[in-house]
Length: 241
Ligand code: F6R
Image (cartoon, rainbow, N blue to C red; front, top):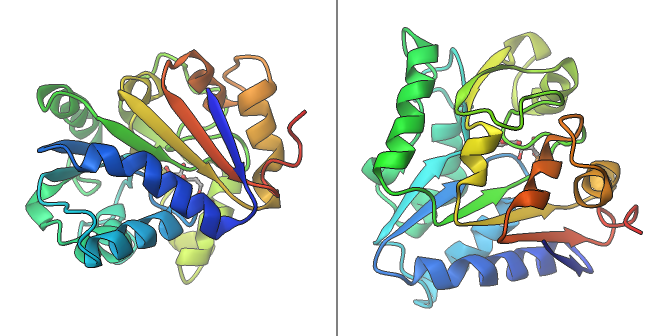
């Protein structure tokens, strides 16, 4: 695990963009994307480099880490809509290069299994961008998720629904379930960049990096991965030894 500590969110975004850029320059790149607030400055930095001609995303396919169950793709808070708004539109990635499970599928369990197969069929993820939840979740793999899990339907904890309610009119509108890549699925990405900013992430980040490998902190599974870069600002890093 490489742990890079930067002074602030803007520096985190530049360092994360530096980590992703070499892979984007390949003729083709399967880029795994998290939604949420943490990667947004990185997406903006990648978009800035695209606008200046430094980077070109024509060979990039993006793959969602997770998707709410019960929201149609065109719902403004679906992760498909979110990644378009936060990233793909700005770098000219067309919608048919955005891959993700359909949270509105009739059988979300079959949809989850199908997405897992799809990730294998396309040759896997070259670089996966992750955030981390206050409870150590990655994707929607909440504490006590199996470290060997594949893409599956997960039940969101109350804390995660509360945290995500800022994107909805009311907490009751936040879906209770999501389709998420499992911890084993995420671990198959060839490289992983985890972004953590702000003091609310400090204890989860310390548990992920320095705690025991444990389902209590799902992100600790990354300790086993050979190519993980964790990029944190000083506030998120404040509980590290
Ligand atoms: C989002 C996702 C989540 C978030 C995490 C942190 O696709 O899978 O695991 O990365 O909840 O969210 P933010 O960055 O909003 O604090």
